[in-house]
Length: 180
Image (cartoon, rainbow, N blue to C red; front, side):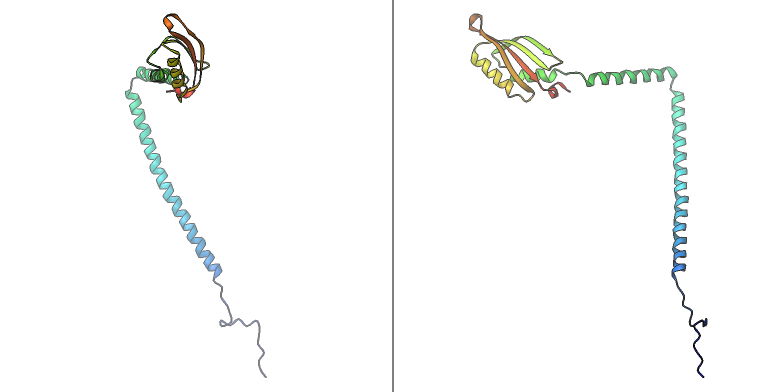
């Protein structure tokens, strides 16, 4: 009789070993070791930085103690006034660029006898006297071609005494020209 094969034969030749549980365990241990090592390394560097911060804090306190209290108050007061000044000047119109543009664009044969600038509307009103209508026309053309001026309007053009031409100009100034 032939012995029948026993499906439950557990001899070492029939046992199949699987490696994935061991591999998972090894990978888990490696990841844990890396995380644990990273924790200790970062904790070490945090300690170094905390020591540096405390050293700087003690240096600041030492400097602050050596600086007289009345001088500290004076510096704080000065800083407050300086901040207020910066806030006030940020909304201030500067006419220095406008005067530069007037100097460049004004015709040499014209003199202005009235200057009025409205800060709310950024309109410059000029009254002047020229030797001829052609001179007035050249001045208007020069002001119209200026990139800092939006619009040029002239009014009250008339011939006055000694054949001189009197006129009024209104120049709408671009806001960029009035900022520092």
